[in-house]
Amino acid sequence: MSTAKDPSCSPERDLIFVEPVFHGKIWGGRRLQEEFGYQIPDGPVGECWAISAHPAGDCRVASGAFEGKRLSELWDGHRELFGGATGDRFPLLVKILDAEGDLSIQVHPDDAYAAEHEGGSLGKCECWYVLHADPGATIVVGQRARSREEFARKVEEGDWDGLLNEVPVHTGDFFQIDPGTVHAIKAGTMVLETQQSSDVTYRVWDYDRLQADGSKRELHLAQSLDVIDYDAEPISSGHVDAREADGVTELVSCERYAVERVRVAGERTLPPFRDFACASVVDGTGSAGGHAVGKGDHFVVPSGHGRLALAGRMELVVSYVPR
Ligand code: ZN
Image (tube, rainbow, N blue to C red):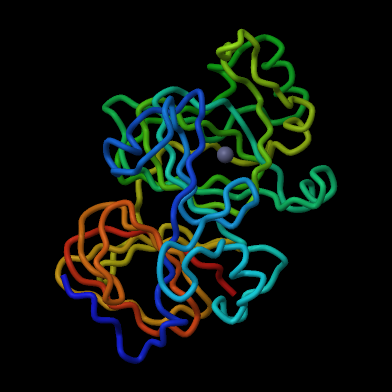
């Protein structure tokens, strides 16, 4: 495949490919190796931090003018790559999750609560594009208690079936998880997650599961009760209704991020992004900006790159911060 670069694009504004960071999790599996070809550590691996400048998993640049640097170093020292983006940290975090088991029932705070209670951390708004769901797989998004008191009572009674909103999940579904939404990815599902760059999770319930050492993982019910949104109506499906136009489907656009699915069959050119964008090839092979790419590749489109030329047969998930 050709490796010729777009001649209008200087090496400093070439696509920035990054190396994922992997995290072992008790609910993880081996699909990140089997289906994405990654070299992963032994044992159950649940999370691939694919594009991240978070201190718990700061991706290294794989090639090009900035090879070997961390993404956080580019954010701190080469802000011109990110256009007019502001803030003291790279705002997005893109992951692939492999749930062989059930993730804990959890909820995340918003920015205001996290800033006050979590040492200045960002809150966490996240969303999931479902890469794979086993037949019959389900997912927890939302809950049915209309008040803090009702939620606490149902937890006390162990009435999880009455409390949690569990819906079927299918390959190609999409779920937006606003702060305050109780949620859990469950067994047999892989998702591409786009989120704020935050690692603050309040665990509501962990199914009374024991870890290898016989202990249970810590719960955070008090904080959960503080941050749960009791007014949000539970959803019934993650089916994507948005219309595809020229291969592009807008999955969500919220204050924190916009996420699009991009399908390429032949050639397709995306218009320039205002600041920067994160892109993940989630299926197929082809080329992006003159680079050969395939399933499992992740890159940042820097400010000034111009139009993004794509070719081949592939599907990407692209995210950026709206202004
Ligand atoms: Zn979450």
